[in-house]
Length: 172
Image (cartoon, rainbow, N blue to C red):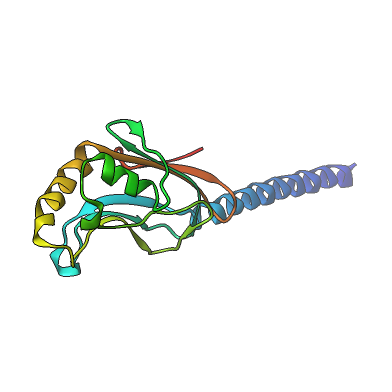
């Protein structure tokens, strides 16, 4: 009879250890996913030390962000795609001269590498002086009229959505 109690106690301890191991394995999997999660942020920069004047996106997370889609908005309405990208369309819809800017933007299947800063719309440092007003207008429009939504995934396939106007990233 004494060995039956010891057997039950040993079985209970083993089951508790198994439960703790399963919990720890699940916690480790979640930690692994979060530890390589991309974190996108975007901002208007007028950093003269780096020759920056424009809208940039930065991946300050610990994993690459693999782009699925990009929607660019001017005054709340989506812009049409253009052979030079949606940010080119945004510049023209804002009434700005696209020759005053260097325009980028991610395409589907592009990756924002860890620590990378990507130009979306940037004042062209070689543009004529007549572009100065366009540059100032871009700074104002970047806060008031331009928005974009970027859908991307992590290396584990977890999907996220970043919205420029809210500077917010949410899982989807």
